Image (tube, rainbow, N blue to C red; front, side, top):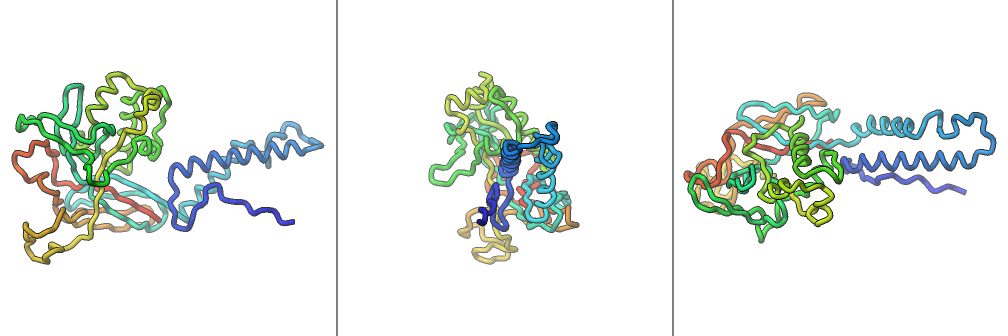
Length: 327
């Protein structure tokens, strides 16, 4: 009688991505399966020639066998599929070299990281309206306000538009994506510090301090030394978000609405072409080059409007991008 064919630990179709979560779950499933098979085999043994090897399979312990299988899987996976996400800063005319190690010529997709309004808290009772690329906030802070140092007026930052799909990722998902380790006793302050440290590791570039921050809610929580367990117990853990605005359009040499050599500022074209003139070059099977060919163009009013109450970044001559690579 034919036995049932084995099924995959984590079913995937051709072209599907292998995520960090998939890889971690694979290790757990393999180890659990090996342990179960060894226990079954040991239970069926009637005559034991060498009792010291009764908890081994093929002369290897469960841990050793797990590592052998995972090592073989890790060597095979790059030949079938691979994925890399990178956050980078591009300067006009300077090629950014990304060493992806995917052993092939990956598809490369480039998204401009837009600046957006936020209220950044650097200390308790110290909140500033700024333009940023990354922002950590709480669900309760869909709209924030603070006094502008430039105009001495109270201004409002809309973090989540009521009539639009919000740009946001659960903070806990970002932690899992970058394999940031923590326990229930870890404080939110330490967890955030560890997250930014990991995020700025290669192949990512470190962003300037004025381009990312957290909201006033974080200052209050950190001053109270909130732990992960406390956040989970009071229902805040799944209300902490990471905001970024990755955006891409098809690049046109002229305004795609009226096809004019000099785009008409009154033409009904909502937004800015993004990313702006970015070139991608494959140098070899492990290296790709990304180059910004011209000065970046930012949506109005960032970078152009005088008297803007939101503090602008120090360097508006570089383009922030999210690069996605896949084989």
